[in-house]
Length: 138
Image (cartoon, rainbow, N blue to C red; front, side):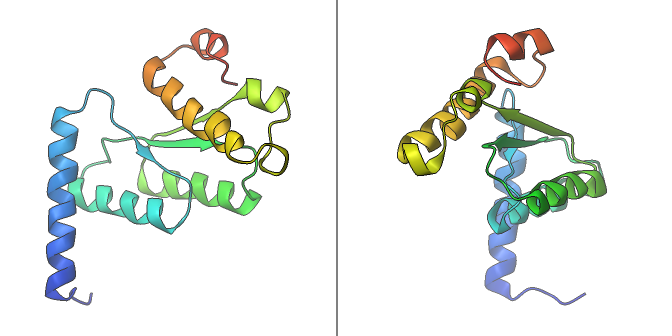
């Protein structure tokens, strides 16, 4: 394996330290995972930080209903291949109201992503299906 240049190795080391430190202080940590390059790099840092153990931080995907099928397949395969627990939450109320980025602009992001993420944080990762339904999830 190729070694990282010194400046990148220092950044990786700092990121790993921050992940470990954050996990030790967090009540209900997750890694937001959209399947893009940024969240994939972050998930790989989690893998490095806790290797050889299974990642202790689950991946959280906020389903906006506008993801490509290939992204969802990548998300599922990535979580499975690397031993991540994967939680997927969506805003069923927004879906029922046909909230979309074309007709609702910035409001779409607020309703389908930010509010859903915030509500998931209040509910926690161990919420029952009934709690999820009351909160407007799937």
